[in-house]
Image 1 (cartoon, helix red, strand yellow):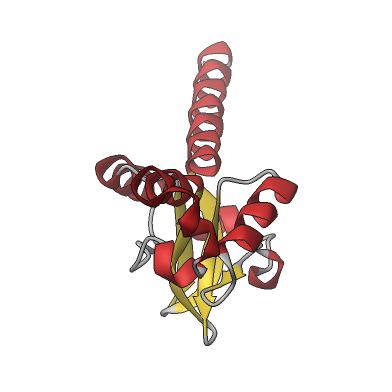
Image 2: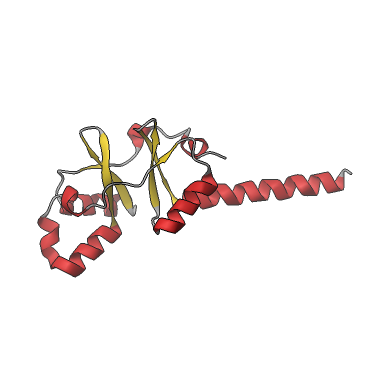
Length: 143
């Protein structure tokens, strides 16, 4: 299954994002209010990076609360690791495991198309395995 299948019912415009020039304090408030762990960071309509809870924690450990007065573009993880819509779910999971990340922006020929979390990918894989098991049980019962 391709990542495109996971985002086909989600409009890219509905994905919660933040701007690279937004204050870190505002971005943290956004994460908290939406109860999410990361957002793609946009700059001039393109993906500039990812801003996550981890970025905040690492910066606070290094700089203390002064990092809260910076702009998102100064503390985000960049460049963003992305996948194309045509990427297979298993490939995206392998990439996330290898790079130790939990969120991926999805692109379509370089343009922002969506955002997936490791939870989205794991759920998709579990659903696929359950469907395969049910098909096998049906086959055995009717053989």
